[in-house]
Amino acid sequence: MQPLETTQLPGSVSHTLSILDLVGQSDIIVKLVMLLLLVASFWSWAVIFDKALRLRRLRAAAASFEETFCRAARSTTSSTASAAPGRPDECRLRRGHARMAPQRRQGLLGTAAMRDSLQQRIER
Image 1 (cartoon, helix red, strand yellow):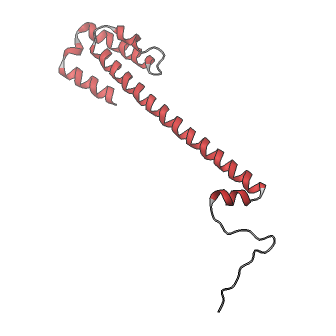
Image 2 (cartoon, one colour):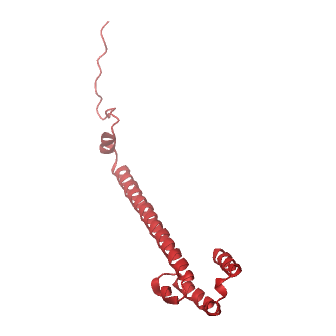
Image 3 (cartoon, one colour):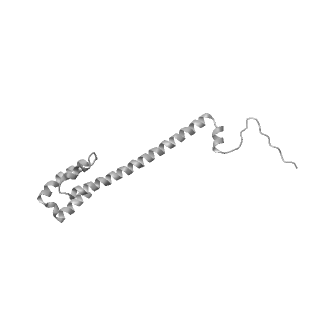
């Protein structure tokens, strides 16, 4: 028996399944949709990385502010209240210093009960 010969019919498509061949053989609408999906994918990954970087910076700023606040709460003057200009919580830091100033002058912050009460209020 002799093997059968295969012939290419006119208008038929080759059966290669590489990505480039499939894209090359596709219609213009399919190419546009795939291009749109590719652009949307890059854009969404750019948004994801941007948000992750912003979140990392915000966490670092929050940790820095908390350190500044704790340092300011331990100090006897409110000079460290201006150490965080432009921060969203700067107003809270200034108000906290203003509320603690009379207690500092009277020496009430030195008692253990007052420090514990202050620590609980800060944590809340």
